[in-house]
Image (cartoon, rainbow, N blue to C red; front, side, top):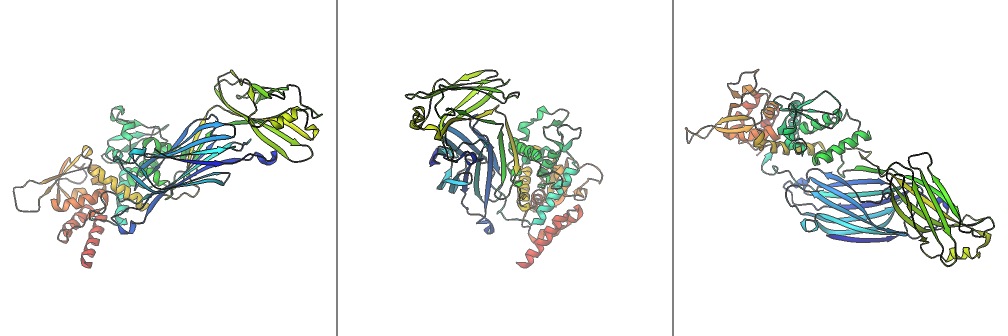
Length: 602
């Protein structure tokens, strides 16, 4: 596994109390750029698809644990990425973190993802502390599709306010064409738009649907087609196997508003932008939870800019309390083994009793404390102690970290620290104990106590400047998925017979093609006029004979499903035009007109 070690040092914290404890903004920034690859379309040769993922983690260190988040990059490269933040080691004045980026899934193939550059920036409070750059990195099987690095932090600043960790990941993917482009296919934006409109009409009028979806807390339901969801809605039937259906209905744990949004996209590749409140955090959180649950890579991409500015916020509930314990009296002399009892957050669910005792002897100054929880559930605590010297009459305060420890405490239990030594050089403390500092300097121990019940709330939202994915790209994805639906033989319920146009063997039987009734009738409104022996006003039979010859039906079938077709020879255009006119297939008529113009321009 490829590992890059990135050490950086913050130095000691020597600031006055009024400025020392500020909001901590600890940021990881990773910039990964993927090289452009040879493309079949010249105008896309230099296009890249960057993805920017920002992860805000509030209070990440109590309890100290490994945390991770996933994000997706939709077409043209459908990949799932996982970011993992792992505190590996910690002691006073020294912390070690590991951060890894793992390509969890990159399609069915064992792909090698070549990277021109991996750029990592680490910053605290907006100040960059380290910059690391890696050239020509490859995500592949031998490194488990993972890039990782470690960061050593010397003397991180302490804060009364909640610590805030920010991880930014930027990945740029090359443009990759969908499978059936570059094979002589011809299409226009108009063709893809009409494909989307026809599929939206199928959602609104779900003829030949085969099961129902019922959202959470409602009696309404949606009639849907398994052939569409099987391809467009990844992992739907893994989460909801057919044998679990009750009365051909699936009870799905998604709100009605969001389920309608998802289904409209699955059918038409469009967004109902006037409906949902895109600034509503609960809605956006549910949205990305559904995307993550069902691995909807292409759907995720819709809600991101080219840089995929998704923001995920992980909030660990944290309570912070502070208190100073004097080590000297008004005469400046050290107290004799002072002890203190501190009731933390009395009358709340986080009530603690903190007992502290100092042993101020010259040879071996030490201390001990106990922490008793009166909470009815397991609590996590972090104790931070600092030795403070305040110069009387001056604003100067000298602060030094002397102790840090983590505890998990059961309901109504307590922990004992045992005898603890002051970390670091204790000469200044010994001078105080000897009485050599006088009344000019006041000495105390400051305790910062972090308490958490381990509760985590995950909130997902988009960048403030939401820009939906380019319509052309969404419709390209829809067209590509429709091509997969066409080739999905398990869901086809319509057999179409076409006569063979080549008269070499007049005894040759008709060619048979397998389609989906729902898609064929949605795309060809007057379908009864383009098949034989099917009167208007009845359901389409299971087997029909088309007026088109077999040679012409193949490119027309491609256009019906994908909005794209092979270039049709000029001597077949009249036959296709007749099919389009009789079937009310206006977008196909427009396609034929463009084919005629193209032939004239040759």
